[in-house]
Image (cartoon, rainbow, N blue to C red):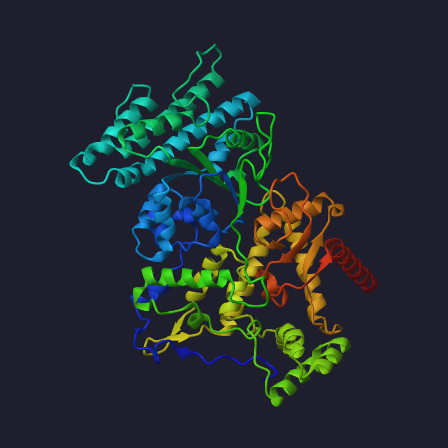
Length: 625
């Protein structure tokens, strides 16, 4: 065992592999573009289905019950609710791989998902009419959602026909017949459409006419006759009428359940959530809601029925966020690592099939800071003890001497101290313009993504751009440790700088994150502090810490920058958020920390220390004047 991590030998990927060809020309570009798109909103149905890797919690969604999906930004909420849509499910069911069994099971249960994005643009139109009374705002939201749900229904007409009307020449004209009936209903008999495209144009015209009438009534000096169209009715009534029309032409079973998959409701107001809750409270057996939002962004449990919705009775919460490490005990082979490998494999297979054998491990290599090292021989044990005596505190050294030669030495000393000692040694030799080469390797990169799917895609995308080739066109892999270290550190720095502009509490979040990171850095890296077997990488928040702490932690959790422990409740926004939160592993390369979950310290103590350091710096500056 060396006293500092060795630089892994870079090698051509295909030096000993006959199934890989040189990464030259277009082939290299295929690899470099495989991870360019990381947001589900920017993908068509084919791409979403092709790249989708289902996780354990996803399978819980294919039931006839109301569910609210909670997940930080980039966790995969949009992908999940899109993959519930019937057109996506039917496409996935065609894949013969067992990974698509969930899709075939959903079709067998007659679950018909309809994806409805409640995007920022949707919510913005609801909020830019400050002149509306609460009653008018409620009516406008109901009208607008009715129209958008029916518009979303047009995307699953063809897939419903494909599933329930198999064979027969009459099915060729069935879609046109359904479109004609829907268009007459939606236009109140004024228009006839024979295609899905014409139906969507009809709805766009209905929306435009409605908006025009709103402006006319708003600006006219004279009294104007009230205006209504088909969608000015109770919420979901136009959708129910539309599904009845569809069922009159398509043999959809009586037990079919329509799933309204509503995305990004964090952009909606408490008034809008109250209306949705009312629908959940009074929902029938054939229409259920699957609603995606951020933690703490289900704004209220209240309804318009003077009876709130109740978790466990009217609906259940589903957590989309994944564990970035295996919390069941020390093993790194957790679910998110498996997910990362599967995502990499599918992207490579579909975008660069020549390199379908390229793995995330071969791209990035191993990580000395995270993966367990063998300390078995007398020489290895002595080298380890030399590092321990150099950097550890007296109590840890004494415990190591006492446990040496026993089973506890490996679990209590080596497992806990090995990575910390290597990092401390690397930081000791880190000077000036030199570049750290310690944060690298597959487990390190995956862990620094904190279980966040979009962050994983962005990191891998940046890494594959750095693939180098030799003169023969062979890829030199793994990617250089210094390059990996620099990419991870830059990502953390850029993320922290962008937090300032995040509404509504980005400034406070950025300030606190920086103070927390620097506090942990002083605890770990300060030359006058020796290492113990446990380092501080988490904070503890109580209700006594005040409103500003609540604003900070809720914003940081929503951005996947503070990771809540399992005991923390992530539900309604009006509840106080208290408990232990881990600083995102994303920040480990920036603040020179070991990406492990260790002890916690009160947030108030960190803020007091930051204030004390600021006072000390001010006094020092004054003394120099």
